[in-house]
Amino acid sequence: MRVFIDLMWFFKQEKKAYISGILILAVVAVLHLIPPKIVGYIVDLIKENELTKGTLIKWIIVLIVTALAMYVLRYYWRIMIFGSSLKLARILRNRLFSYFTNMSSSFYQQKRVGDLMAHATNDLQAIQGTAGSGVLTFVDSLLTGGFVVIAMAATISWKLTLIALIPMPFMAILTNYYGSLLHKKFHKAQEAFSSLNDKTQESINGIKVIKTFGQEKEDIESFRAQSADIVKKNVAVAKIDSLFDPTISIVIGLSFFLSIVFGAKYVISNELTIGQLISFTTYLGLLIWPMLAFGSLFNILERGRASYERVSNLLSEPKEILDRPNAINTIPTGSIEYKVKSFHYPNETKPVLEDIHFQLKQGETLGIVGKTGAGKTTLIKLLLREFEGINGTILFGNNRIYEYRIDRLRESIGYVPQDHFLFSSTVKENIAFSDPLIDQTFIEKAAKIAHIHDDILQFTDGYETIVGEKGVSLSGGQKQRISIARALLKDPEVLILDDSLSAVDAKTEEAILKSLKEERSGKTTIITAHRLSAIKHANKIIVLENGKIIESGKHDVLMENDGWYKAMFVSQQLEELVELGGK
Image (cartoon, rainbow, N blue to C red):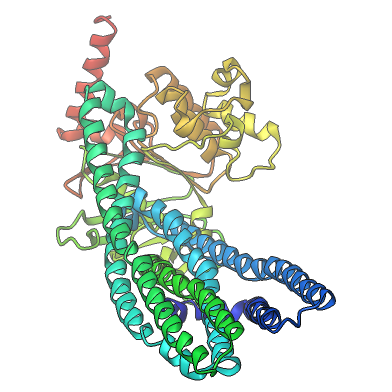
């Protein structure tokens, strides 16, 4: 029953609905007692030859009215209790989604998408069942069972009632044992479902890679193995679940046996009438539902408890990136200055960045280059506050970035990441993501600066073309340029292009950079690139190697040095010359 205690915050919130539903259930439980009593009374009248047509019609009318009353009341308690359980699912779903959107990059590096999806689907469904079917089963079994036992003891025979209840403690002991086993097994079954969810999501997203490497059979076999594991673990749950009904049936059967044996004895000794014995056994039949419900209750509660623990453990993980008290509620502007002694990722000791010191004045362009893994993207993400734990600081407009509210800081930055992401909607909706109601003119202007406007006009439905999941229908260069247009639409104080021109040709790259220079006069731009032609126009270029700045300066200055930058630039120029046929 611990899950009910865990959910007490919600029951208090919806106390009116639950109290109303429970009161209606109580009335229904009392109405259940009427038919057996009437049947026993009529049987005694028949035995005494005292049943008249009028009496029979009267009691039939009472039974019909009772049935209609239960019909109506059952409708309303379903609205009260099941309606409230739907609200709980909505609250938890909203909490999870809000939690997901506020977590940092390190959280998603540690979690699997399939597992997070399982929390938001299967686990919430089990919790909803606890607040709906669980509450119903618990209350109804107690009320119906309690009222039936009281009616049996108070109106027929307390001695026979005690005899009939002798097997009940054995049922309580066994069902409690089954419940503890069920909790462990269901927890493992939910984890297995999460793994399969993650496997399915990865396979669908990576289907092109799987096909390219001819790994379809291996991937199918891997899926079958995980699917078989889920079946195995759910069968283990079902095996325990299947023990409840036989156990309860045996207990109920023993109660019937004792009731008939001792009840017949009491009839013979005139302690009971035959009608009272029939009423008693009918009442005992009414106890079958509460007992079966009690067994089902363990199943529902243990599933709900396992799922609530999973969701609660997830939500209890602290957010790493938080606003400081009295954070500045204005969009930052001005120069940017890095004073970073060192930075390493959470749970790692080796620094990713060391001795990063430079200043970028407002309106300037910074180029960041270096080998793969040199720390270029990490340098950018520190400015976006995707990570904490910097040994040093970053200034933006003479204030440390930690002094700004996170939403205000990021509002000033337009970021185009390496792994550009497009939503499964229209081109227009993707570009206008930051302002869905913006005028079409501004959308087209951003597209023209990104040099994607002409391409869009060639699409089947122009700006209303559906791009497919993650922009599957577009080329890499088109996706990059739509992502750039989306960032430009914000007209950000700082535009960051994180290797976002790698999929476009040199001519288009040059055209985009020229447009940015013309349209973003007085605003800051940061570009990371592997192709050095993308940053040779920058006011400042820094070269990273193993997380350290090994060279810095303008293009001309770096070309005078006999360093990595010059060697790489010359190499790339020769490659381009070869591609052009040596002309």
